[in-house]
Amino acid sequence: MMAKTLRLGAVAAVAVLSLSAVGFAQEAQQQQQPKPTLTKEIGSWTVQCFEQGGASRCKMVEILVNKKTGVRVLGISLQYIAEQKRSVVEIGVPLGTMLQSGAVLKADTYKSDTLHYSICDQQGCYVMLVADDKLAAAIGKATNASMEWVGFGDGKKVTLAFPLDGFSAAYQEMVSSSSAAKSAASTGDGAAVK
Image (tube, rainbow, N blue to C red; front, side, top):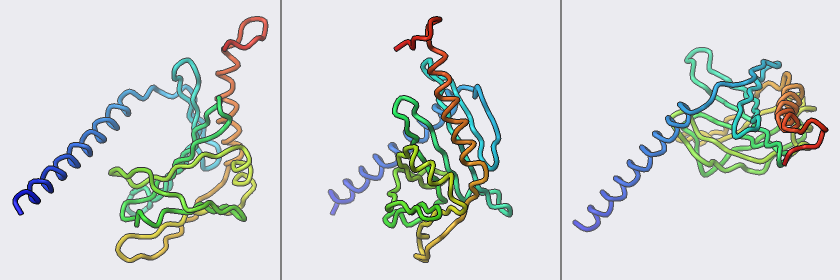
C-alpha cells in the first residue's frame, strides 16, 4: 500500500511539474512574441503578420466572447505556412469539455471528421487541423459555420455558430501578406533568393 501511495505521489508531482513547465513556456513565448508588422480588421476577422526568421508569418483570428461574463467561448486562428501553401487551423473551446468526444467543424455542406483535442490550458481546449486552399474556399463560400462539442458533466452537445463575415477577404490578405515577404526576398533581377 505504501509503495502504491508513493507511486501515485510521484505521478502527481511529475504532472504538477509538467503543467508548470507548460505554463512557463507559454508565458515565455508570449513575452518573446514580436510586435505585429501588420494588423488589419476585415469583417469579423483580424489579420496579423509577424517577422520571424526573415519571413513574414501571418494569421487570421476570430474570437467570440460571452457578453455577460467577458469569457472567451470560441477562438479560431488560421496561420498560413507559405512554404507549404497550407494553413494550420487552431480552434479553442471553453474548459468543461468532454475531451474524448472531440469537436466537429461545420460550414454549410462541409463537415469535418471528429477533431481530437491537442492540448488544454487555462483558457480552454484546442483542436488543430491542416487546411489547404480548397477547404478555405469551401468555408469562404459558406453562409453558416459552427463548432460542435460535448459538455463535460451533462454530456449535452454544444453547437456554437460563428460569423464568416470577411472570411474570404481576410484569408486572401493573410496569404498575400505571407507571400509578399517571400517575394520581397528577391534579387534586383527578379530571381527569388532560396
